[in-house]
Image 1 (cartoon, rainbow, N blue to C red):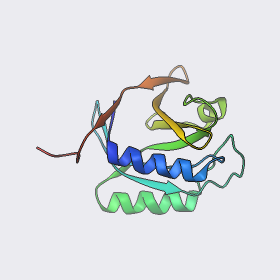
Image 2 (image 1 turned 90 degrees about the vertical axis):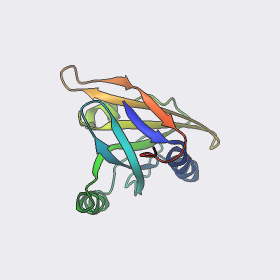
Image 3 (image 1 turned 45 degrees about the vertical axis):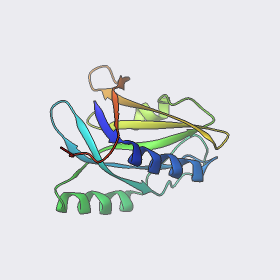
Image 4 (image 1 turned 135 degrees about the vertical axis):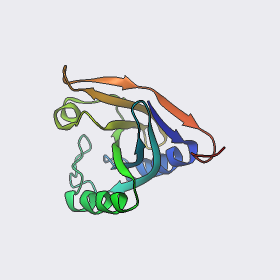
Length: 144
């Protein structure tokens, strides 16, 4: 399961809409325990591809973000990206480049407006994506 606030989802939604009709990507940062990944921050990352149907995160930006997160006791727990005018389901390209420990939050952006989000995890043994429960909460994560 991946847990995220409505506010963070809205930040991503604005980001993917602003990049339409190209794919937009970014990092999901937070904490991971055995059963739940908790998103605490989102960080847009430059997509080096100019295509509408793939993304390639800038590795220097990714490393800088990863280093900054580690220094603050957080980790990269997943990535997000958009699928312009396509379903929020992983593509073969997504599967071929995925890592089993990450969550993959995919945003379907239809005509630059409607946005649907689904989360996926790569099954390490079968090398296929499986749906991941997306727990959207109101307010700050960590509130009593």
